[in-house]
Image 1 (cartoon, rainbow, N blue to C red):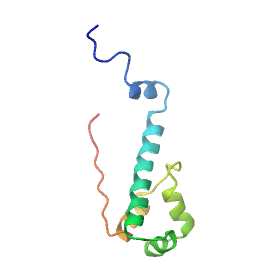
Image 2 (image 1 turned 180 degrees about the vertical axis):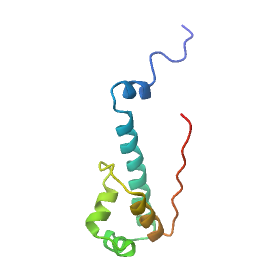
Image 3 (image 1 turned 90 degrees about the vertical axis):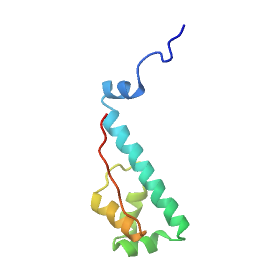
Length: 95
């Protein structure tokens, strides 16, 4: 048999089950939370110190770093990036 791929794409399955948007959001949030946590480690920043730099509460920062909480405002993301000396770059891509 010379078929390279059998069956459908996983994204197609998620779309059929109405799970694609949610799983994409959770995956994106996990990447963002991981990147922020890694930058905090690189800069030797505590959660308390980063929250102060962001002018927010530590609880709000914990929500930002929570991989399972897909709710995230662009304002919060931009604030975290600025507090870390970074900028956010978002881009829409064709599917």
